[in-house]
Length: 467
Image 1: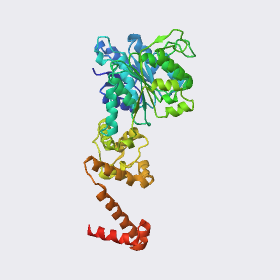
Image 2 (image 1 turned 135 degrees about the horizontal axis):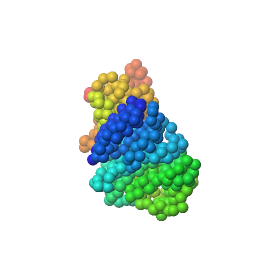
Image 3 (image 1 turned 30 degrees about the vertical axis):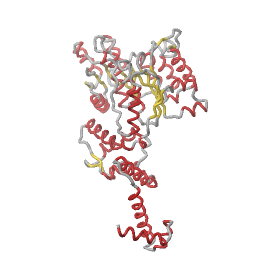
Image 4 (image 1 turned 30 degrees about the horizontal axis):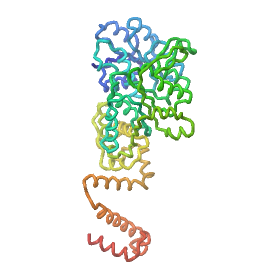
């Protein structure tokens, strides 16, 4: 069933971006400029046409977000309201929770995070009579790849599909660790239960304990209501702990106890809370090295590291680069409702030489940039962002090696044999031509530049002239 989301924000650009993102995620979206308009519409709707969730800004002319929540919950106390705020500090977060908000969304927000949060809010408002398949949906973003490394990754996910075993996902930033975690959840026995994700590095240390384990009313200044933490929200499902290597030492101890005993205490609580949660953790850091340096608990490492999935860097799966580029270009053109742009052969060959330190995330951002900024239908080298053009000079020493590697790999895939029989003479011919050009045709000097004897250079020159 299509989720229905109502958005209210006095900023037209925010409304447009959020509405477009949610509609692309197959949600039905209605946008309002002010809270009073939303309340009037809410009063006119019958129960079957009510929204599944509301996303509201805090600061708006007239009625603010907190007042809107109060009015909405007078009539529909279970209708989840997500509060957007430009202030992502502890006070703003606590104010949102105290007002009865389902969750708060700090600005500027990540589109994927906002979409996932909207889905969770809708799922929390599902009626018991609805089908279980429609409960707690997970954003179904594709994991794309035809390379050997990605096919092995797909097989690993398949082998784990019938289990609820703990998994540690490792890989560089931007490789898609959360997508893999979602795939593990969606193909597990817990697929119809919640998938809850939290980035432990993105939340202030003082707030992280409450985020994970919840808190009791009055447990600290501003805690005016009891609040469930991520573990309780994920009960029966999967909790994804991203950037686990950044978790503070004292919370590592608490996490270890939850994994061992399946229970914990809320902040300020005295009654144990029992949960059944599969933990999938991820990090771009070297946890073994952190264990050696005593910054990460060894017993927690072994508890998390039951099954390890290493996601390859984009430069290790260059077969997928053009596939991903075309996918992201199509995605961006669909989101922006403009004609899809294509890559020139010059650009394709150049992009294949880059290291892509930001991995798939960097590639996706580049595709969006090109969709917006490239002047023509065909993307040329001049259309590339300046930082990628500057990489051309810094990569000049090894770009030819990358191209040679790709050429050899393609020939091997085609089943060719004795490939050095024509590659080696070609390399020598190119080198000889450039050396003679450098020396003005002086064979002795050219031979010295190449490390050949004069007779060898003369023989090679005759061979190349025949061919």
